[in-house]
Length: 79
Length: 226
Image (cartoon, rainbow over all chains, first blue to last red; front, side, top):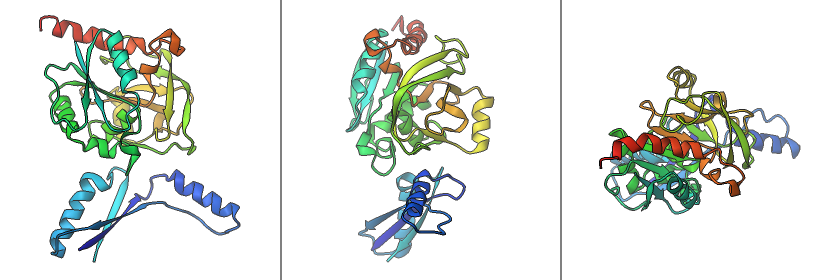
């Protein structure tokens, strides 16, 4: 089973890299970009075939390593 | 007195930290990240600066989950002393031994220069050799030193006198100008600036000498009979 984990900074946490991207887009002439938030996508190829078990394991992985839950939130999609 | 310096792939201040400990009178062991236990009778553990594991995922994140860090956390939880400098500070926040997070510098640039710091508290083994309010100069060299924490945590750090150092001119956007913080029991220090890079006149300054000297002064009575 494959898992795709989206890790994003929580709302309210300043994202200096996203801000830099927003400025660069403005420089390129893209107008009306009110905000940019940058995150990560982590793809996992899992031996587990049970969806619920995989979801629980990946959430545990997120809590322990993949996200720093002080500042980041995560979302797990399984397929 | 015995100090241990943890070495990760990508650590690059491990030798400097070793020499700084040695100059203060410590016998130093370097400890590889794959080890699962620490040498016996360590008085203090140093987590050095560098770019452990290439800063992959997040700065310090992989190092914080390495086998040796379990032993470092156990050492700290039973009241052992730990100092984490630069990447070592990032590792300590990732292990949860120190609260908060070090994010990308607000200016997005790698900052590499000597900075003026205020010693906020002298109530710790690390800062006992300085006067509160004293200004010292340590170099910084980091891309991710922007200390970030929730407002209630920042208030708690200030209330509990756990802010060890503040920047005079904030180089990275750190909340409350924080350059270094202490754990609740005051025995774990994390700081972004490098005291180990100012312990010899040839390095351009000796402002860091008092930090290692005050740690040594605290250790000496306890281990004199060991």
